[in-house]
Image (cartoon, rainbow, N blue to C red; front, side, top):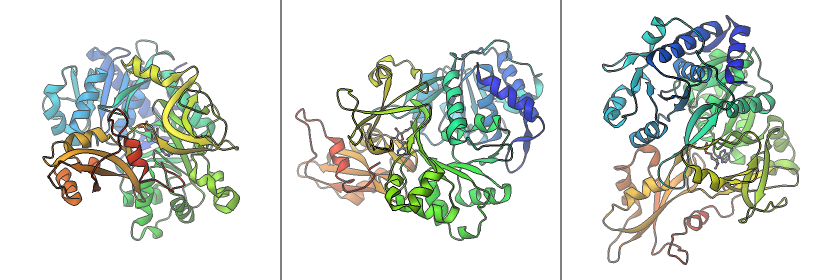
Length: 519
Ligand code: AMP
């Protein structure tokens, strides 16, 4: 079995129906099939073979979907880079996965040109849209090549993709997924999350295809639905797309939902075509869930997951949202991350790895056929997560008697703000350059709008003074927008362990006390 059985099957079955479309053009299933065969064959003609890695740096576009499906069909291993990450992260990820080709969108030409000398493994730079000098034009590759199926067979155990994700320190780690992993992602979506998806559906990709939105592509292709591409999230444009294209399904992070609710005049848009809005990646406050429910109706579905156990572990379904809103006895469930998916096991373990009964807080572990192959070239880090059939998630939580999972904390230090991952180390490296600062930690603190925002707790050097606001301004000049602290407090000392290690979690927890849902 391989992903092409699904992709090829959908193309044959739905022929002339629209598979993907944006503001300007529509691509039918058969045309999509033809284009991905041409693209895949063009790469083979350049000398790429099954298992070679292709990095893609694009905002959402029809070409992003094509690249994704082409790689799956031909057995190239794709890495979809986060367009919002720093140049350093891009260099790291492209080098770490050893990409031979880099496909980049029109808006990234200068960025890629500036990095070019630092990407020695990239042999082919392929530009979507107007091609700059020293790059192959994507459209020419497709136009000049005749379509042919892959010249090799692709099997279940072959690698499918590398996703870069949270680490406690340093650079993101590469999560290696196989064709089998992705088949499981598709199956789980078809069995649980998108089990109602059908031919008449329109799925709107408003969040990056390099994140959760990308997991919805093949499940909807298989069901013959059309996929509406939005280059990037913009609250008004999402409403306009929903209204004009009769969107039925979309995937958003809580912050985006909040921005949409707050958009002046948003009540006048018709969202009546929606039946499913999958949200996740970060918690959403119960009050916000109620507000969204009132505005958009019973469309909300929550997903909790991570790339190491792709892509979802648990979900709170639409009916469960409705019941929790209507029935005070079930209201607590709005603070949960729902129940495990049908094919996924979830447990809670203590520090020794022993499974705990309902009601006890501990680390969330998961087992099933959804677990990643492992971190790319990092067996040690993979082994650290594994405990028999179980894999640790790094999230702390508990299960209740009815099997609902509550997330209460995170072992990892990553700060999830507006659905983006921010590593405290990146901020602290900058902070420690401040001449008056002795030590500091960056932690995530509660925010209605962003889920978490970055807060800095800093200690001045002896005899020096620090001012919270001035420190925030100082960081603003030195950090990209998504990593900037929003606030800072100045203290005399930070809590430390017996070994003198700063107890980051203790600092963080002091901001989250008394909340029904801490992450
Ligand atoms: P990533 O692998 O980069 O997508 O990050 C996954 C992490 O995001 C998880 O381990 C959680 O800490 C957090 N996360 C994902 N979904 C949710 C959710 N529904 N509620 C709270 N946190 C979430």
